Image (cartoon, rainbow, N blue to C red; front, side):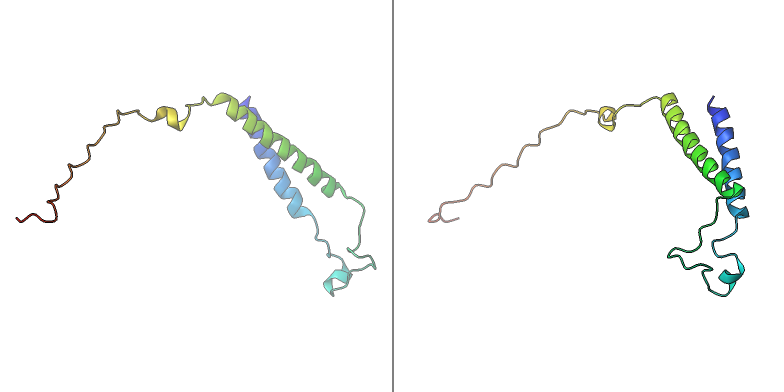
Length: 111
Protein backbone atom coordinates (compact mmCIF):
# COMPACT_ATOMS: atom_id res chain seq x y z
CA UNK A 1 0.00 0.00 0.00
CA UNK A 2 2.84 2.36 0.88
CA UNK A 3 4.48 1.76 -2.49
CA UNK A 4 1.26 2.54 -4.36
CA UNK A 5 0.75 5.83 -2.51
CA UNK A 6 4.41 6.72 -3.06
CA UNK A 7 4.11 6.07 -6.80
CA UNK A 8 0.91 8.15 -6.93
CA UNK A 9 2.65 10.92 -4.99
CA UNK A 10 5.60 11.01 -7.41
CA UNK A 11 3.23 11.10 -10.38
CA UNK A 12 1.30 13.99 -8.83
CA UNK A 13 4.58 15.83 -8.18
CA UNK A 14 5.62 15.62 -11.82
CA UNK A 15 2.12 16.56 -12.99
CA UNK A 16 2.08 19.57 -10.68
CA UNK A 17 5.48 20.74 -11.92
CA UNK A 18 4.40 20.49 -15.55
CA UNK A 19 1.06 22.23 -15.01
CA UNK A 20 2.66 25.12 -13.11
CA UNK A 21 5.33 25.60 -15.77
CA UNK A 22 2.75 25.59 -18.58
CA UNK A 23 0.75 28.46 -17.10
CA UNK A 24 1.32 31.95 -18.36
CA UNK A 25 2.37 34.65 -15.95
CA UNK A 26 0.13 37.28 -14.44
CA UNK A 27 1.26 40.04 -16.79
CA UNK A 28 1.75 37.96 -19.92
CA UNK A 29 -0.52 40.08 -22.13
CA UNK A 30 0.59 42.99 -24.32
CA UNK A 31 -0.04 45.61 -21.63
CA UNK A 32 2.17 43.69 -19.22
CA UNK A 33 5.07 43.88 -21.65
CA UNK A 34 5.12 47.68 -21.30
CA UNK A 35 4.53 47.78 -17.55
CA UNK A 36 0.78 48.42 -17.63
CA UNK A 37 -1.68 46.44 -15.61
CA UNK A 38 -4.25 46.27 -18.38
CA UNK A 39 -7.05 47.15 -16.00
CA UNK A 40 -7.87 49.74 -13.37
CA UNK A 41 -8.31 47.26 -10.57
CA UNK A 42 -6.11 47.41 -7.50
CA UNK A 43 -4.64 43.92 -7.74
CA UNK A 44 -4.52 43.64 -11.51
CA UNK A 45 -6.82 41.95 -13.97
CA UNK A 46 -8.57 38.88 -12.71
CA UNK A 47 -9.31 36.50 -15.54
CA UNK A 48 -11.52 33.47 -15.50
CA UNK A 49 -10.07 30.28 -14.12
CA UNK A 50 -8.52 28.27 -16.93
CA UNK A 51 -8.23 24.53 -17.16
CA UNK A 52 -4.59 24.76 -16.11
CA UNK A 53 -5.37 26.77 -12.98
CA UNK A 54 -8.08 24.31 -11.98
CA UNK A 55 -5.68 21.40 -12.62
CA UNK A 56 -3.09 23.14 -10.45
CA UNK A 57 -5.57 23.48 -7.60
CA UNK A 58 -6.61 19.83 -7.81
CA UNK A 59 -3.00 18.62 -8.11
CA UNK A 60 -1.93 20.74 -5.12
CA UNK A 61 -4.77 19.35 -3.01
CA UNK A 62 -3.90 15.77 -4.01
CA UNK A 63 -0.23 16.47 -3.27
CA UNK A 64 -1.11 17.55 0.27
CA UNK A 65 -3.39 14.57 0.84
CA UNK A 66 -0.81 12.05 -0.39
CA UNK A 67 1.91 13.75 1.68
CA UNK A 68 -0.15 13.44 4.84
CA UNK A 69 -1.10 9.88 3.95
CA UNK A 70 2.53 8.90 3.47
CA UNK A 71 3.50 10.37 6.83
CA UNK A 72 0.68 8.61 8.63
CA UNK A 73 1.44 5.28 6.95
CA UNK A 74 5.19 5.58 7.55
CA UNK A 75 4.68 6.35 11.24
CA UNK A 76 2.47 3.31 11.62
CA UNK A 77 5.14 0.98 10.21
CA UNK A 78 8.14 2.13 12.23
CA UNK A 79 8.59 0.75 15.68
CA UNK A 80 9.30 3.08 18.50
CA UNK A 81 12.66 2.38 20.02
CA UNK A 82 11.72 3.99 23.27
CA UNK A 83 12.98 7.04 24.98
CA UNK A 84 16.57 8.17 24.91
CA UNK A 85 16.56 8.11 28.69
CA UNK A 86 15.46 4.47 28.71
CA UNK A 87 18.42 3.50 26.53
CA UNK A 88 20.94 5.15 28.83
CA UNK A 89 22.82 2.59 30.85
CA UNK A 90 22.33 3.20 34.49
CA UNK A 91 25.85 2.75 35.81
CA UNK A 92 26.20 2.77 39.56
CA UNK A 93 27.13 6.21 40.76
CA UNK A 94 30.30 6.08 42.79
CA UNK A 95 30.61 8.55 45.59
CA UNK A 96 33.96 10.26 45.62
CA UNK A 97 35.34 10.95 49.01
CA UNK A 98 36.39 14.48 49.66
CA UNK A 99 40.10 14.85 50.44
CA UNK A 100 40.94 14.98 54.10
CA UNK A 101 41.31 18.52 55.33
CA UNK A 102 44.84 19.70 55.91
CA UNK A 103 45.39 20.31 59.62
CA UNK A 104 46.10 23.93 60.36
CA UNK A 105 48.39 24.56 63.32
CA UNK A 106 47.19 26.98 65.95
CA UNK A 107 48.18 30.60 65.52
CA UNK A 108 50.70 30.65 68.38
CA UNK A 109 52.39 27.33 67.58
CA UNK A 110 55.87 27.10 66.07
CA UNK A 111 56.97 24.65 63.52
